[in-house]
Length: 278
Ligand code: KIV
Image (cartoon, rainbow, N blue to C red; front, side, top):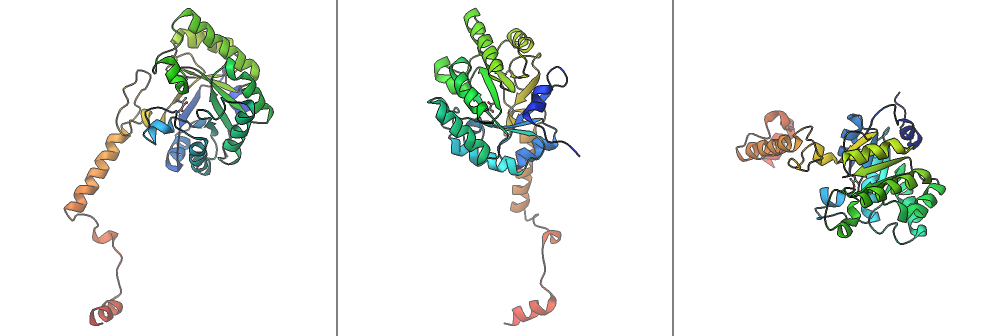
């Protein structure tokens, strides 16, 4: 029988086996992610953009993450389930960070949490770990700081910025995170960080040398249509297949081709006669 993947197991995969992480937000996406063999399922705050139609992740609430985490945890058995801590669920204080991380695990059924930022949140991260909750770090382009960055821009291109990201990675590693997401940084920086920390790095737009990769479910499957970000590869055009399927259904209904006899239930003859004569 397949063994449940734990945070220590992910930590131990560094230099042994690449780690495949994918987002999921509900029961079908969790089932597909797990059947597809993902090691980690992330209920990302990307759900704000991908599922709820917001322009960024800033409006996502802890309740949204818990709501979607519940569905994912009901429908995934083996993958490590990580719940994202949304904007302002941990920034204000260590106490809030621990409380909200606890809710995502206790109410949402997640195995671990992920939060954005390095140096500024080290005490928050240590306190969450102390409470018994494994933490995944996330540095580089951290989407909750989009207004600070002035847009979704590649980070770490100047010496100051690269050094800051390296320092954040070192502090996160020392604080005891079990993995670090590196988002939208140059490949060279991704490689240097990966070689300098003891925990696995999981890249998204961070080049080829991270210990694992993460992509948003809908991006890698082109749902509803292909995502034209430089760091995304479309592994299947599911959006096209789904749209064609819906269109075939609509045409079949309009042309009285669906339902067919095989899709119908029937009354027995006696009941039918009685009904007609009543
Ligand atoms: O919210 C999210 O989906 C993420 C990943 C893209 C890393 O943070």
